[in-house]
Length: 96
Image 1 (cartoon, rainbow, N blue to C red):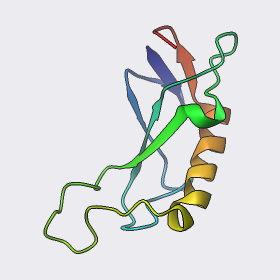
Image 2 (cartoon, helix red, strand yellow):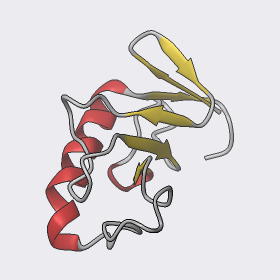
Image 3 (tube, one colour):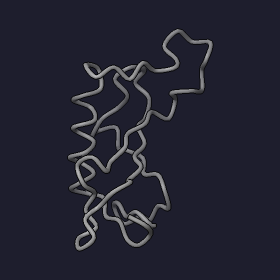
């Protein structure tokens, strides 16, 4: 599977622009993986966009890590990233 965003092609993970969102727990950059999309348009489905922080497991000695992934902290962030993904990311090929 390939993912296309902003004229660039990615094979698995797409970085989320900081203007869209950043990690609500540590301020780190977010990454997106797409697990489900519309076959006719390549548009990720609402729940096919999975959001991760690129710093979640890198600083185990820091009290902020690992992330708690609390619904209250992450809900609006995940919603923003999913909306961005549906508008800007397109999937091509691979197994759905």
